Image (tube, rainbow over all chains, first blue to last red; front, side, top):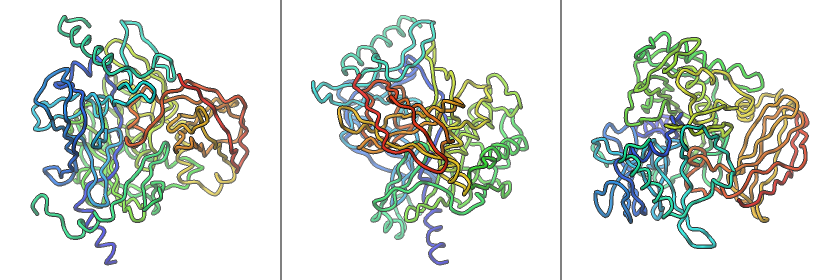
Length: 185
Length: 332
């Protein structure tokens, strides 16, 4: 009985540890145009915080920016993702990205007046960068782009779904930004 | 209590931190060095419903839709599972109050999230102590039996979220297409597919075989242990195990599909809860989604390989498992 009371007293102070979601998906142009900040860089620190009402836990991620493709608040930026680990409890929003120091990514963030920006569409604004084992080049999974008005089925395993060099990915982002500036759909 | 001042018990708990893990079909939580499936050990699963509707949905309509959604899972004959509506409450979901609560919350910050499920787990035992589901009232909702164009169906989203509450992870059994302005779901063979159908669809009110296999795997009845079977094996590439390959078992008689993933560095996979019969196996990479919808982000999921059909039909017998199936994939 005492043990149960002890456990419950902890539970009352701690956030949930797992979450799962149903998402509305965005096309890549929407991701680009709906983001205030687009940046390539590396995670240098993560810090877990209680939400203001102490009923949730968020992780503040400090990101050292190598290149801004849109926006540009400074050499580093701090953004917030839901969840984090406190004590033996871990708060996870399934589908929400998790970060560790050293992670490299191209991030699409929006702030909407909040103190810390967040990732576009929960996880749809994270494109992780990996190092190709053979060429040592930095690679990114290709975005899902609609081509014109003709529907195109997304085919898993297709040869076209290869990782892109980071520079090529960045050029695709720039193309979308230029299209948007010209008012091209 | 001021922020940053942890009670001594919490501080002590930090010294024995453990990490929950996710797996395809079944959510898991780490207990010490092992990973246990997340499941309700005390049944019936008792839940409350917030006594509050939202625009277009009255409190009574919401209650009816939630009750019907639980009944969908409760009706799976081969799963040893029972649920019970304890009552209505003014409490919000997502608060750590030792009550399992389903209700609306306004979360404009989660601008593309229709609903979400929380758990509170005793990580020393893996026991679920509480789970909450919120429905994002930033979106338009409906409980109309036929669905309403432009409004999301409470029951469809609730069936998905309750699947999580019962311990199921996401399924990758869905097909999408890109069109100007967005990505559209063409079809899904599981209500646990994480991308929503267009608003107005009531597609996900009905469980598919993938969902039934999953819930039966988590809560097997005595009967299902005798009548259902499994397929296990490994996915390899150039002789090495592939982590995160999506393996789909296709029943050649019924056409039903049940999916699973290779979940270790050896490429090992198990698809359980299968109806007896003959199956073909298709293996594909998860290269069209953010893998964090399925796996812990720390895992190095391999998506650099092409689709592969296993070269033999696999037979699943009642109450037994077909093992040592090896699917060899090749790089793209």
